[in-house]
Image 1 (cartoon, helix red, strand yellow):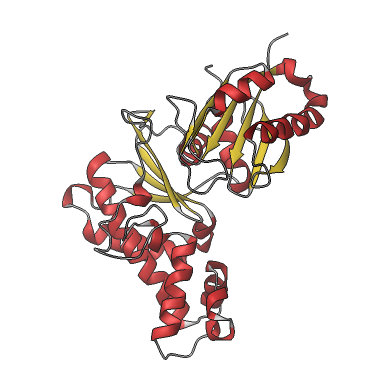
Image 2: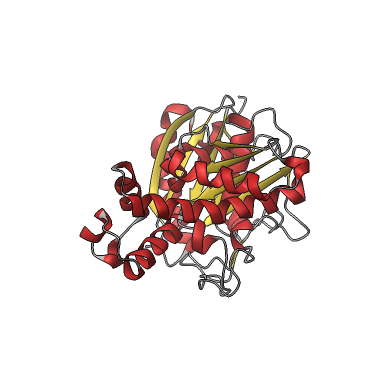
Length: 318
């Protein structure tokens, strides 16, 4: 029997989502498990396997699976390991592809979660037909996947493309979870925008709907909802964030000359509130060589499926 399907697994710090994917990029069935409750990675893999068997019944079971692709924080495509992921419960080096392959009896491939999103976008989404693009994931943190000449950039050690941890955006800026200061992630992520909102509320005196929310509880969604109602301070928070992101994107253009930069993740759902100031400040800071040549697009994939599709797409050539 030809093996018709692949499995894509998206590992997050709290939840892991996985699905069965066909060659056309349809997610045929999905399930999830809790990540953080498993101190033992072997028990975690057992849990995924048991849940997988439940959804695989209608698709020929494990015998019809070609391979498994996994997108994970600090996932290394070269080694198949998760290496020193700060937001996962397992510390040090975890030989994930080896453990998953042994449990399922099929090949397994691991990559960084943002790289998985880039592969999904290139295979099924807004970057179809593009050979040079960057995807920026604006979620809890800022991730990135860089494609040059049709190939995902991994670097010599498998960890290339950590654009969220470029720290030239603000010298001696905000403390980042990576241990450094001023990383893009601390400003342009959903958490970074919420952090800006709290700073503005504490240091500014303008009226704002955000003042009706306990300062420490303000989220990026709260800022978006206020901006939709015309709240001037909330709109200014987006403009501040977009300025920093746009300046950073102008630097990213200089090293890879992408056809497009694709924004993905929760903060990208803010639409024009984030993209207008981002594009304005990117164009303002671009070298004349690239002015008005680089598109800034939103992802064409459903957020719930993008990482599953990208991780799954890794395995078609296994």
